[in-house]
Length: 176
Image 1 (cartoon, rainbow, N blue to C red):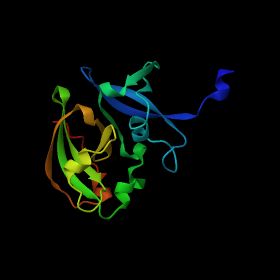
Image 2: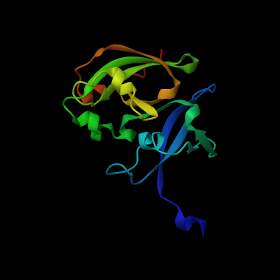
Image 3: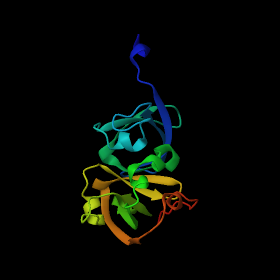
């Protein structure tokens, strides 16, 4: 019986922009349990996981296998990502930098990167060298997962001394 061995998943709505394609409304599948932290799997866990292709459900109910190397950006709500429980929002010494990110194809996104690195290594440049495939960019109530391999440039707009609740405020998405 095929259903006997299924792993329970939940669907998370996402806006997905692929190379050369318009942004699409899809649903990503995330597990009820995460491998690397307590609680359920988050979209960032799937995007930065071991898989090269991840399944997504389109508006017509069809399943697509997304090649993560072809993804420019995946946008989800910050609530679906569970950012308030994330390490970078718990740490008082987290760096918080307002940036503009230019991606292949001319897409520009503005938001905040927030990260924790060892003392003396807390520069944005060091953060951008981290091995994860997707970079989280906080934009009010939304979270953009940006494919680092598709970034053309990043411009720092300054270090912000904001709290997590300010980063998750009601600002509109900023795509320039």
